[in-house]
Length: 89
Image (tube, rainbow, N blue to C red; front, side, top):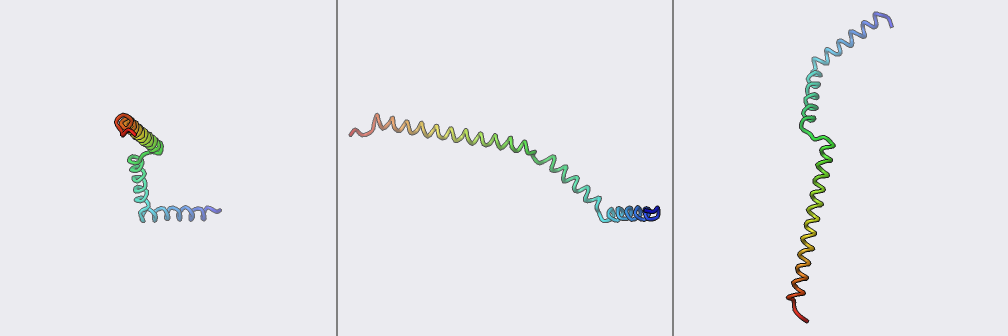
């Protein structure tokens, strides 16, 4: 490539960059950067989400276990009551 054609390529590149600046590409760059910063500050990371998910599933399991224990205890209480005070046949 001759020096004249290189100069034309450089001039065309500079002209293209300046035209894109005038059309607002720099404003888009700012917008994208601010969106990324906002997401980074306000959204949970994947590991935090997994940790919270495992904690909530453990809480649900504990609640189900307690419910089952209460139901078993109530059933035993009913059997004991009926065996002591129920009708004699």
